[in-house]
Image (cartoon, rainbow, N blue to C red; front, side, top):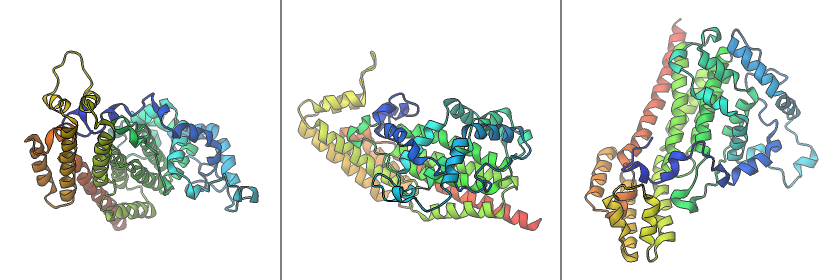
Length: 423
């Protein structure tokens, strides 16, 4: 996703294996999320588009909707019962006074997301990712949907989609990532969030098929909130994944705007949220991520490798031996550094990052960042910078394009509104 100077030596070299990795046992959140499964039962109630008794609204015309309703009926009856049990806002005294109980408004969204991840079967992930959206187009008629969409919709349950929405509404999201591991830190939730976002897009279109445009809008807005949660950790890959999730929602919103089937209320809900995002200077924390990568990488190196032979140990992690390939010249230079020279290299790299942060928000930032990158190639920031710093122009470009996409999506919704008013 991000073009770095060397893909195998980006700031977090292990990120390419994050999604779906079998090493998720290293995170402390998954066991806790599963242990607290029942604490979250039924919090997903109260969604727009549900009937008064908590069941999904009757499906309309399509084989897609019928299949989805059947799946939800089988997989979500327990959830329906628990939702009904939470109809009252007043907690029983034994629970309200319990020291072990955390109200939904105070919970950590990360735990709620991990719970929802366990509810999405692996085959459902694949089906949501394989939808032919070109074939779907602006269609909201279930009978005319391609088979790829039909299969993806049938694999989802209403309860699962509601739980994801519930998690996205939580204001606190702490992934508790192991930053002390430096470049060895795992971020397993990123792949799961991408898969969840693809499922939520299917869920949004399914709501349109079922004649529930308000629910479709809520699911699209939930995707943007998920995107912000994905970008919480100050690491560049997290910001990029957040942007990718938000872009999925933008793409789907523009298609639905073109379809002419969104109601005024649904359009206004999305517009309001996107305008709020644009009011933020850095909605996906791209600049914060640059600062975070500076502190993460350089702090980790200072803590672990400022000793005799430390530079050689560091280079082994940055570029593990690969068969008979000739070592990179920059790696060889870095490997030979003494403790004092490595200290100097860390200082030079920090000076580079500081200059990057100083120009990040300037109107001519792309040109200035290009000049800084060229300075790295000319060895003006030392041997460590030549190995670890990302391609900064490519790092900033997705953030700029994301803001443009948000504006384009708002414009598409407003054009659709004017078109409807002229009918």
